[in-house]
Length: 552
Image (tube, rainbow, N blue to C red; front, side):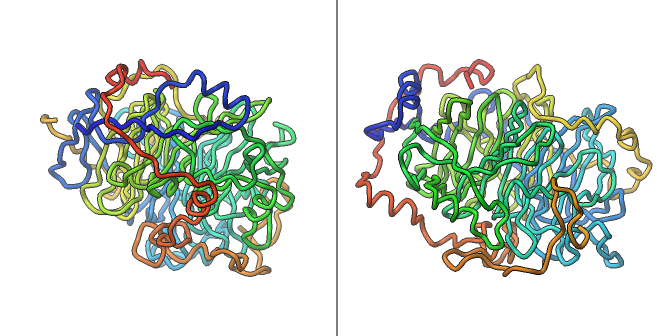
């Protein structure tokens, strides 16, 4: 077990009265370290060489790239973010993004298939698949293509209306968020949400009470956005805004210390659908805060959890918690990586129903699913034993009994079960329309060998169409006007490579992964902030508490 590290140096001030008041009641917050908690334990090498898990946990492969789906299409490659929804007849519905560029070979089409008329862009092959599983046995009931013709569907989020799928791309006609219904048994006409903005989108989440949507952007100088509907009855018409720290323009969040809290406000975006990639440029012109590659985002119990993949002094990642209320907002840094050996560039995140943040790594070398506990501890939960591909799509079934995750480059979707903490309430938001999906009760096509029972492995006993549709909610299909690249100040090529495979975009963000952290460098130089130091401290008294006993 590695020692705990207590961050000694805190920034000498907290900005704003609300932040100062909140800080007065903060517990000690520890920076990242690796340790095996008693309730999960050390990872056990997988004899199949796919996924190392703690003793008592098992995995099942529920989907693989290239398998024939029950609708006649193939399972596409590069599975990325996912959301799990309750389905009818004791099923769970997985909505899975596929981060494919137009030239990707792992498209959903067989050799004799052409793009369907529902394709958003017939030259693009990214999109979303739907996987319906028996919630008890994890046997496949059906799977099908829902959205196709988009580019690099990286992350997204669950919502009261279904799955939100985001394009990490700003080619002509692209760069949007799409709504995908969880009861869609066939490929659907695209439902584009123009109001959520056009940019190099990463992920989204929704406050189920207000229908405010929160959106991340995967750029080295990205912003964090909020969409506020004018009326909950019309949730996709309203105002797009960007987060700003009160009293400070262009605040560099990458310089924040663990447990630091800043008061925030929102600035309006006048042009949410720009012709080129200038959304963040307008936002920063109005003083918006800067995040270094905003990626995963998740709503949980009144708070928004946000991942900055390359933020912090080691460029290894940060996790923020945003509290956004009627009287203002606060942003708190709840954890960060000070050493990439301990946490290496978290990407997709989710908050488990019992309050722990599960983080899927997209770093160099070994990649892990790691967990940030409410106490501030971090520990390993799973290791990719098969390759150096990133993890993606980490999420939990509504009953909290199953964790789903993708190994993107290997094209596999896994379901993990074991002694997770028991929960009484579902931890994800469903779609009311799923109740009418009669086909999910049983599908004769599942007798096909390609969709039969998947292997289960134990960790061991040792441990659209052209033009505007006329719908103000969704907007139209891609057009040919406007350049395919962004403004001259920044790289906005967007969709040239898949982040899960070989190519010229190792960061998977359409940006230069080796360019360093300019926002951090400038901010440190301007503020004269010294390098943080740490000392060894014993574990906090509550470090060995069970997750169900920890506060969230």
